[in-house]
Length: 386
Image (cartoon, rainbow, N blue to C red; front, side):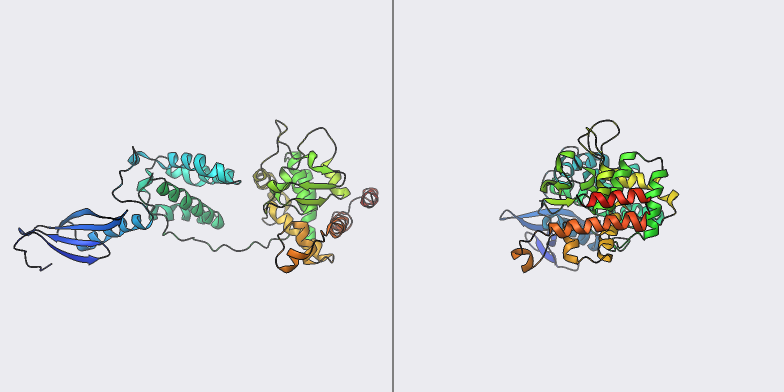
């Protein structure tokens, strides 16, 4: 800082990255940050030297530059009561303005916030949350045996705080630099035949709501996604075919699913529109209810290692492969989007093969795995020929 005092005016020396030291003829030194915004050069005071050290000045300049990089004007007036924005209030705004209108899985966001975030942060000011707070929150989850859950929570709060920055509810988010504590691995959980048997008959003996039991068994029998099974309606069923409309399907493509006799037996016949309805009215359940019920009233009594409802779909795909069907047929059963030239020019719908695959898979379940009584097994065989 040994810069000669100017005779007139002021002396400016750059520290780089928009940071300047300004020296008056009387020797007063102060830090300023400069940046361009809407074709104008702006200056922001960062404090006087030596009260503000070079290290602190550089830190403050980096914070201002971060806002500029996020297309936020550092000179913009903060929104009213910005300092009073709590994490609880931010969560409400995020859910109402972003998650609910845009995410089918917004209820999972609500669950994560209520279970793992708001109990600790609800009344804290959002602009006071720092990296150490986030790491402490995630480590609490990791140490209780929820490593992947900690990753999901980090993704959610990053999105929520970035949403606040985009809406000028916060100046910046300190969460973006936090890394996941656990490595996400592609799930490969497949139930063995013995586990399928324990699962099926364990459900029958559990106190779980009957419709939830039906839903989970249908995932295994049909190979469809939990969310699609959960909202199955009788208006979508015509004879032995279930047509899932595109707006309910992950890839947006209408899916036709053959319902074997075992599947039709599970669905049953009544006047209720939704097959997997809630206890209280004729509305479909949320697919997350199956996961919650499975772990509250299911797995610990079945003697089976941890699994999720979606793993039943993977188990069905693996079983269909094991009885001899190609990846192409399995992909059609699962409604995976085909890739490549074949997907563009091959108009064959594979419905016959899909029907055969689901019939044989149900026969395998009934006869080899579940070992249903002979009468029921014969009936299933007869129904398959319809």
